[in-house]
Image (cartoon, rainbow, N blue to C red; front, side, top):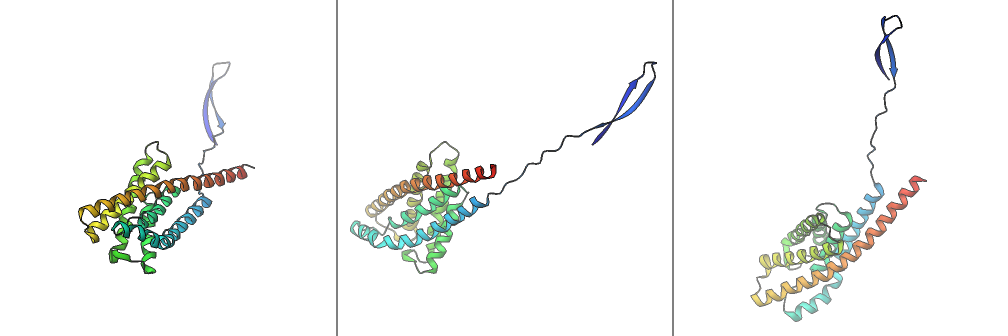
Length: 221
Protein backbone atom coordinates (compact mmCIF):
# COMPACT_ATOMS: atom_id res chain seq x y z
CA UNK A 1 0.00 0.00 0.00
CA UNK A 2 1.09 3.57 -0.73
CA UNK A 3 0.31 6.82 1.08
CA UNK A 4 0.08 10.26 -0.54
CA UNK A 5 -0.41 13.68 0.95
CA UNK A 6 -3.19 15.84 -0.43
CA UNK A 7 -3.38 19.59 0.03
CA UNK A 8 -7.00 20.75 0.43
CA UNK A 9 -8.67 24.16 0.80
CA UNK A 10 -11.68 24.65 3.06
CA UNK A 11 -14.63 26.94 2.33
CA UNK A 12 -13.00 29.58 4.52
CA UNK A 13 -9.80 29.52 2.52
CA UNK A 14 -7.71 27.61 4.98
CA UNK A 15 -5.20 25.04 3.84
CA UNK A 16 -4.88 21.66 5.38
CA UNK A 17 -3.18 18.39 4.44
CA UNK A 18 -4.58 14.90 4.62
CA UNK A 19 -3.05 11.50 4.11
CA UNK A 20 -4.69 9.26 1.54
CA UNK A 21 -4.18 5.56 1.10
CA UNK A 22 -3.59 4.39 -2.46
CA UNK A 23 -3.69 0.72 -3.30
CA UNK A 24 -0.59 -0.26 -5.22
CA UNK A 25 -0.95 -2.38 -8.31
CA UNK A 26 0.25 -5.95 -7.92
CA UNK A 27 3.46 -6.66 -9.76
CA UNK A 28 3.26 -9.10 -12.58
CA UNK A 29 5.41 -12.12 -11.99
CA UNK A 30 6.32 -14.02 -15.14
CA UNK A 31 6.44 -17.74 -14.59
CA UNK A 32 9.32 -19.52 -16.18
CA UNK A 33 8.05 -22.83 -17.49
CA UNK A 34 10.08 -25.99 -17.82
CA UNK A 35 8.80 -28.55 -20.26
CA UNK A 36 9.88 -31.75 -18.54
CA UNK A 37 7.87 -33.97 -20.87
CA UNK A 38 9.46 -32.37 -23.93
CA UNK A 39 12.93 -32.84 -22.47
CA UNK A 40 12.29 -36.52 -21.69
CA UNK A 41 10.89 -37.01 -25.19
CA UNK A 42 14.02 -35.46 -26.74
CA UNK A 43 16.31 -37.62 -24.58
CA UNK A 44 14.45 -40.73 -25.71
CA UNK A 45 14.79 -39.63 -29.33
CA UNK A 46 18.54 -39.07 -28.87
CA UNK A 47 18.95 -42.51 -27.30
CA UNK A 48 16.94 -44.10 -30.10
CA UNK A 49 19.01 -42.33 -32.76
CA UNK A 50 22.20 -43.41 -31.00
CA UNK A 51 21.21 -47.08 -30.93
CA UNK A 52 19.76 -47.09 -34.44
CA UNK A 53 22.74 -45.30 -35.98
CA UNK A 54 25.20 -47.88 -34.67
CA UNK A 55 23.17 -51.09 -34.88
CA UNK A 56 21.53 -50.50 -38.27
CA UNK A 57 24.83 -49.42 -39.82
CA UNK A 58 26.27 -52.77 -38.83
CA UNK A 59 23.27 -54.57 -40.34
CA UNK A 60 23.40 -52.82 -43.73
CA UNK A 61 27.19 -53.03 -44.04
CA UNK A 62 27.15 -56.35 -45.98
CA UNK A 63 24.67 -54.97 -48.52
CA UNK A 64 26.55 -51.67 -48.79
CA UNK A 65 29.85 -53.48 -49.26
CA UNK A 66 28.41 -55.40 -52.23
CA UNK A 67 27.72 -52.12 -54.02
CA UNK A 68 30.97 -50.39 -53.07
CA UNK A 69 33.04 -53.45 -54.00
CA UNK A 70 31.39 -53.52 -57.41
CA UNK A 71 32.25 -49.84 -57.90
CA UNK A 72 35.78 -50.31 -56.49
CA UNK A 73 35.36 -47.61 -53.82
CA UNK A 74 35.91 -47.98 -50.06
CA UNK A 75 32.50 -46.83 -48.85
CA UNK A 76 30.01 -43.99 -48.87
CA UNK A 77 26.69 -45.74 -48.26
CA UNK A 78 26.63 -46.96 -44.66
CA UNK A 79 28.25 -43.73 -43.46
CA UNK A 80 25.47 -41.63 -44.98
CA UNK A 81 22.95 -43.96 -43.35
CA UNK A 82 24.46 -43.47 -39.88
CA UNK A 83 24.66 -39.70 -40.45
CA UNK A 84 20.91 -39.70 -41.10
CA UNK A 85 20.41 -40.19 -37.36
CA UNK A 86 22.61 -37.18 -36.58
CA UNK A 87 20.33 -35.10 -38.83
CA UNK A 88 17.29 -36.70 -37.20
CA UNK A 89 18.52 -35.78 -33.71
CA UNK A 90 19.24 -32.21 -34.80
CA UNK A 91 15.87 -31.77 -36.51
CA UNK A 92 13.78 -33.17 -33.67
CA UNK A 93 15.51 -31.53 -30.71
CA UNK A 94 16.27 -28.25 -32.56
CA UNK A 95 19.14 -27.73 -30.10
CA UNK A 96 22.45 -26.31 -31.26
CA UNK A 97 25.26 -28.82 -31.73
CA UNK A 98 23.02 -31.83 -31.08
CA UNK A 99 24.34 -33.53 -34.24
CA UNK A 100 27.92 -33.06 -33.02
CA UNK A 101 26.99 -34.47 -29.62
CA UNK A 102 25.30 -37.42 -31.32
CA UNK A 103 28.43 -37.99 -33.42
CA UNK A 104 30.59 -38.11 -30.28
CA UNK A 105 28.22 -40.60 -28.66
CA UNK A 106 28.04 -42.78 -31.77
CA UNK A 107 31.84 -42.82 -31.98
CA UNK A 108 32.11 -43.83 -28.32
CA UNK A 109 29.63 -46.69 -28.77
CA UNK A 110 31.28 -47.83 -32.02
CA UNK A 111 34.69 -47.93 -30.32
CA UNK A 112 33.31 -49.78 -27.32
CA UNK A 113 31.88 -52.58 -29.47
CA UNK A 114 34.87 -52.78 -31.81
CA UNK A 115 33.37 -51.11 -34.91
CA UNK A 116 36.63 -49.40 -35.82
CA UNK A 117 36.68 -50.19 -39.54
CA UNK A 118 39.30 -48.63 -41.81
CA UNK A 119 39.46 -45.37 -39.83
CA UNK A 120 41.24 -46.85 -36.82
CA UNK A 121 41.94 -44.31 -34.09
CA UNK A 122 40.55 -41.56 -36.31
CA UNK A 123 37.05 -43.03 -35.97
CA UNK A 124 35.86 -40.41 -33.40
CA UNK A 125 36.98 -37.60 -35.71
CA UNK A 126 35.18 -39.22 -38.64
CA UNK A 127 31.91 -38.92 -36.69
CA UNK A 128 32.52 -35.48 -35.19
CA UNK A 129 33.51 -33.73 -38.46
CA UNK A 130 30.24 -34.48 -40.30
CA UNK A 131 28.35 -33.72 -37.08
CA UNK A 132 29.83 -30.22 -37.01
CA UNK A 133 29.01 -29.75 -40.71
CA UNK A 134 25.42 -30.92 -40.19
CA UNK A 135 24.95 -28.60 -37.20
CA UNK A 136 26.28 -25.60 -39.11
CA UNK A 137 23.98 -26.23 -42.06
CA UNK A 138 20.97 -26.74 -39.77
CA UNK A 139 21.78 -23.58 -37.76
CA UNK A 140 22.26 -21.44 -40.89
CA UNK A 141 19.09 -22.74 -42.52
CA UNK A 142 17.06 -22.15 -39.33
CA UNK A 143 17.32 -18.44 -40.06
CA UNK A 144 15.36 -18.76 -43.28
CA UNK A 145 11.85 -19.95 -44.00
CA UNK A 146 12.94 -23.38 -45.24
CA UNK A 147 11.02 -26.60 -44.73
CA UNK A 148 12.55 -29.24 -42.49
CA UNK A 149 12.66 -31.69 -45.40
CA UNK A 150 14.94 -29.37 -47.37
CA UNK A 151 17.10 -28.74 -44.31
CA UNK A 152 17.51 -32.46 -43.63
CA UNK A 153 18.15 -33.18 -47.31
CA UNK A 154 20.90 -30.57 -47.66
CA UNK A 155 22.45 -31.24 -44.23
CA UNK A 156 22.70 -35.00 -44.81
CA UNK A 157 24.35 -34.48 -48.21
CA UNK A 158 26.82 -32.00 -46.70
CA UNK A 159 27.62 -34.34 -43.81
CA UNK A 160 28.08 -37.34 -46.08
CA UNK A 161 30.39 -35.46 -48.46
CA UNK A 162 32.36 -34.03 -45.51
CA UNK A 163 32.83 -37.54 -44.09
CA UNK A 164 33.99 -38.81 -47.50
CA UNK A 165 36.47 -35.95 -47.95
CA UNK A 166 37.88 -36.48 -44.46
CA UNK A 167 38.27 -40.23 -45.06
CA UNK A 168 39.98 -39.54 -48.38
CA UNK A 169 42.45 -37.09 -46.84
CA UNK A 170 43.16 -39.13 -43.72
CA UNK A 171 43.12 -42.73 -44.98
CA UNK A 172 42.17 -43.67 -48.53
CA UNK A 173 44.15 -41.43 -50.95
CA UNK A 174 42.16 -42.67 -53.95
CA UNK A 175 43.07 -41.96 -57.57
CA UNK A 176 41.04 -39.23 -59.24
CA UNK A 177 38.55 -41.51 -61.02
CA UNK A 178 37.82 -43.60 -57.94
CA UNK A 179 37.57 -40.45 -55.84
CA UNK A 180 34.97 -38.99 -58.21
CA UNK A 181 32.88 -42.18 -57.97
CA UNK A 182 33.32 -42.21 -54.19
CA UNK A 183 32.12 -38.61 -53.79
CA UNK A 184 29.18 -39.15 -56.18
CA UNK A 185 28.13 -42.23 -54.20
CA UNK A 186 28.42 -40.30 -50.93
CA UNK A 187 26.31 -37.49 -52.38
CA UNK A 188 23.63 -39.84 -53.72
CA UNK A 189 23.38 -41.89 -50.54
CA UNK A 190 23.39 -38.68 -48.48
CA UNK A 191 20.52 -37.32 -50.56
CA UNK A 192 18.43 -40.48 -50.14
CA UNK A 193 19.08 -40.66 -46.40
CA UNK A 194 18.45 -36.92 -46.04
CA UNK A 195 15.08 -37.28 -47.75
CA UNK A 196 14.17 -40.11 -45.36
CA UNK A 197 15.39 -38.07 -42.40
CA UNK A 198 13.13 -35.17 -43.39
CA UNK A 199 10.08 -37.44 -43.50
CA UNK A 200 10.90 -38.94 -40.10
CA UNK A 201 11.54 -35.52 -38.53
CA UNK A 202 8.17 -34.24 -39.74
CA UNK A 203 6.38 -37.31 -38.38
CA UNK A 204 8.12 -37.18 -34.99
CA UNK A 205 7.55 -33.43 -34.65
CA UNK A 206 3.84 -33.94 -35.38
CA UNK A 207 3.66 -36.50 -32.55
CA UNK A 208 5.63 -34.17 -30.29
CA UNK A 209 3.39 -31.18 -31.05
CA UNK A 210 0.21 -33.23 -30.56
CA UNK A 211 1.42 -34.35 -27.15
CA UNK A 212 2.28 -30.78 -26.21
CA UNK A 213 -1.15 -29.65 -27.34
CA UNK A 214 -2.86 -32.33 -25.28
CA UNK A 215 -0.83 -31.29 -22.26
CA UNK A 216 -1.91 -27.64 -22.65
CA UNK A 217 -5.57 -28.65 -22.97
CA UNK A 218 -5.34 -30.81 -19.86
CA UNK A 219 -3.79 -27.94 -17.89
CA UNK A 220 -6.56 -25.66 -19.05
CA UNK A 221 -9.21 -28.09 -17.85
